[in-house]
Amino acid sequence: MFAVSKKIITHITLIASLLLSGLAQADTQTCFNFLDAQDYARAENEAKQLLQGGNLNRIDERSAQLCLGRAYSSMGRAQDALPARSTLAIHRGTGSLLQLAGLNL
Image (cartoon, rainbow, N blue to C red; front, side, top):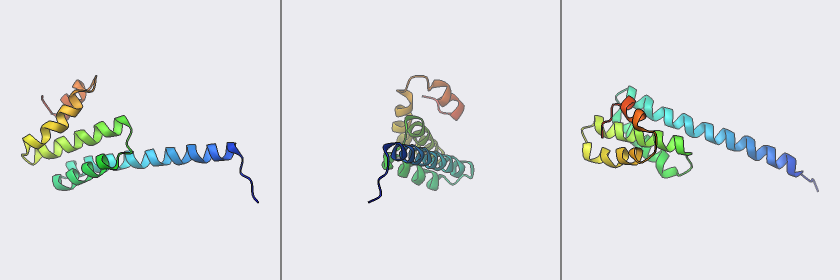
């Protein structure tokens, strides 16, 4: 039988986690690319998929919420945008992030 050392397993796990977090970040950027292209429905869908996946770190989760709020706001769905904006507002230090995004609470 082939025995694998704990050190090798640890390294493989570390590399896999870094690669997976990179994929989540790329998906977050995809959402903003849809916003830039004024494809708000696709941005909404991308953000919802990211948030429902549940495997985002805190920064990516905030980015997905921001993207979702901006998509809703751009589609004239201000009431739908409020929960996404509120989620961002409760995080400490996001005031400047909201201002940069053009969201005023």
